[in-house]
Length: 215
Image (cartoon, rainbow, N blue to C red):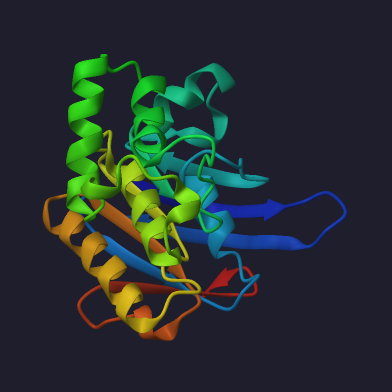
């Protein structure tokens, strides 16, 4: 499903964030990417979602070289990807339901279908009874669950989660991981980036990045 071929990422005036990365992920896999802060985990996920383009090498998604997509084609690609951002990126001028509705509206779903999907996603993460609340009224763990609901509302085949358990206590972190595991059991490919070694379990494939290289 995803393939990196000798991928490097260099920012102007900075260092190489990724260097010669080769990696393959199969449809339906759950993969945990570990490494210290600044190792390149977030950049790896952004390349998978075409939020960044490689400086060298190729990134393939379903046999399509997404590093060379026309910019007009990128939004169509992202409709098949749910991204859980590290900094949440919630809209505080919308209520909980409105935040989940946004990607459905952008994807062109009709109002009735969008509402049904948004409420189903909120129900899966246990926030259906908070649909009229503003994000600022939610706890940190609830805000993270809202991010997951927004990411899965379009029912994408691929979920990318960047530090989904960051700054959460262990109970909340475990509940977030359980949700992602359940989505994977339903056939969704899930990639989690985390600096927390406790996230890694023997049940799932793990990939470690150290100074921009896979080890």
